[in-house]
Image (cartoon, rainbow, N blue to C red):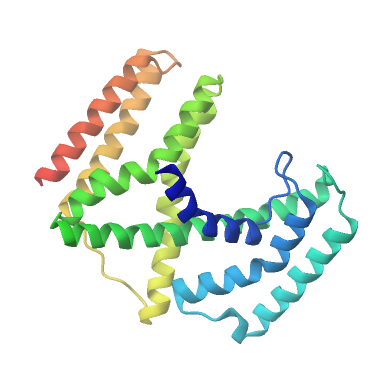
Length: 249
């Protein structure tokens, strides 16, 4: 089964590596960085066309981006260090930020296809969208963050892990909703969008506030500046109550 999954994933992995520059230590490969820089506009063209119906090559911006990316790729191939590097910091920083942007578009595109597949499975299996979101999409979307945060905690970086737990949802709410509404208003041409708060979303909102209050209480009142293990058990129980409540309402 692993061979089958790897065979299915291999074409997408090749395309991703050829369009996403990664100049960091441990992953550095000069020909690959140069090639991915030069080919990255092709991925951006597909991404904007697929997600927003915008052909970036129909404007000067797309052509300028292609010229800059190709020139930069050739410069990296000619002047960047060979072997395992490393590249100079003044080169790594802009390439890493650009690669991060490309990676974000990959994640957005994969997430969009995943939601479409979940919707299809929900229709075929006659599973309500609320159940699919709570039991499949939400855990699957957060599993990678869970593994990363647990790994950070085991390495003694609990403060960083806790910060990531709080900063991730804030980023999703602020940037995700902001860009989402901007795209919706641009596509529909409306100046304002009427928003309703369904019962299941309101439940999640209330439980989010309850969890934040629980963190403050556990850290400031009970733990005197330290969040103990008991908070983890209570938080997991709170999540179970949230899922059951959302399914009920």
